[in-house]
Length: 135
Image 1 (cartoon, rainbow, N blue to C red):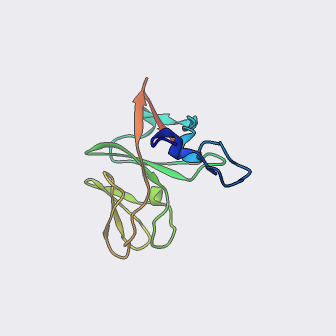
Image 2: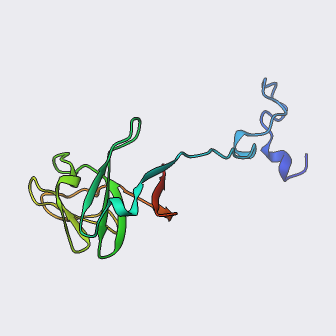
């Protein structure tokens, strides 16, 4: 058998029941539609404010409006699982009100103890005065 695409065939001559089938890694990929979620209007989050977003079946999120614009993070401090939406914006950081741990609004990275693990950050889109994410 010549080298090339035929080398990707399972069970070449070994009486395997899958003989002659393409290897799964060569079957291609399916495009999966990810849900696009409208979080809020821009006007719902005044400059310097945080807005908690709760949707059934999705993680709790917080939308922040800071000096860097809008940011979307998971609404849970990684130190004690406390809602960041109850905290405050300090420059380009959000500060957890429980113990003062701070997270970067650009990356979700933990900046000050007691927080040491990053919080999940979501890319967002602004369209027609609305903030959208795709999960």
